[in-house]
Length: 321
Image (cartoon, rainbow, N blue to C red):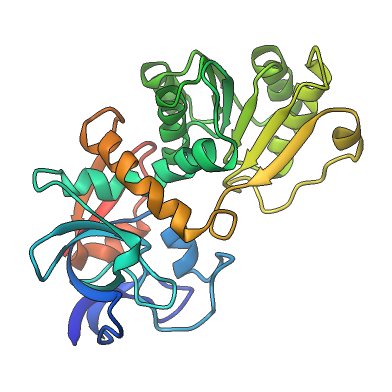
């Protein structure tokens, strides 16, 4: 089946809008959907550049890890793509029906396509990796990015008593109070100064959602542990993103002198079945308006321009065929 799609033929170039031969569905668990909206997430960009840890290096490819589409029987669905199939940035896509959830007909497809991926990282982290207990406090490290802003809202929705949001972008930082942050911390070029402010604001948090990693995370981690009144009280550090870099140098004393528990949240850390089980409740949060979403819709034909345009903090681009 020939469809119009965003096609990556080189990891050094943005996708181009052109024809692509979509494979036929195989087996009872595959179906074709007419794609209505697909989010341009950072995870999509890293996969299309060959840098994501799940990348196979095979080209050409159609990017897109999720989307909203309509099945042949008329049902409106949100779906997560299969790594072995072309992605969602096409007029049509082959999906695994075990990775979808049926949506209400009156849902805003752009909102759902924009919000599900960035919200899912913190939603699953706080429900599956380290289930949050009512009243616990949370630090979102990297809270001025799209996923970080969602994480502030998700933490509050799931019962956090206190949320600290930390990030670099001053304009986005100013918005966090309206999204549920009780305290904000500005991260600058000076890691030591930022660490001191984090120690003052967040030394007693129960959980950290880390979208930064690398040197800023290591500095923050040590600062929080040194300032903690009772180091034997558990501090759960959930590594989600690596905006600041892929590796972290951590003194061994951090693990011996405190009850620090580090784990990640992403593909492989949580089963596909567990992710899918969380889809209905998150769809409800987004479609009901309980999570604020800022999205802009762009025609799929303009994918190259959308791909190379500067990101607007807090705004997620959604492509529509």
